[in-house]
Image (cartoon, rainbow, N blue to C red; front, side):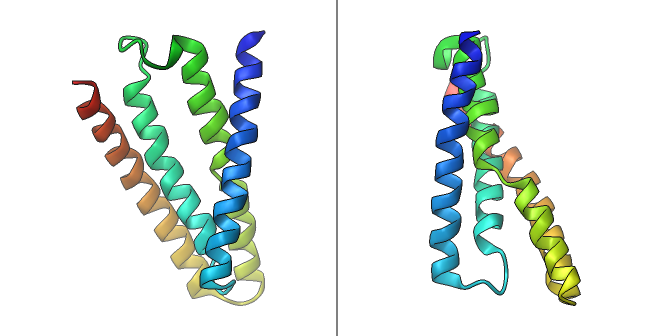
Length: 128
């Protein structure tokens, strides 16, 4: 039962971080392109890659199963915004901004896959 409390705490923290960062970036860059959501998804992909490598059961980092659940299911799960990405992409399409919608999908998928790979590699280097 305690593991759910750790996941809930991580989700709350991740959600607050997501909202704050996305709003800050939108304030700086404007609303024409969902750059805040893109940044959150790429950085979240990097972080979950790092956590996947660093918080492996064999490393003993982050309190074992509870720490891993807090970081990956909780913090990263609350922080990343795939549902927001989907809604914003749909809105771009509905508004007739097909090129921006295409770029959002292409950049999000490509950069998030690259970020999770880089994060995992960085985490592996950290645990050696």
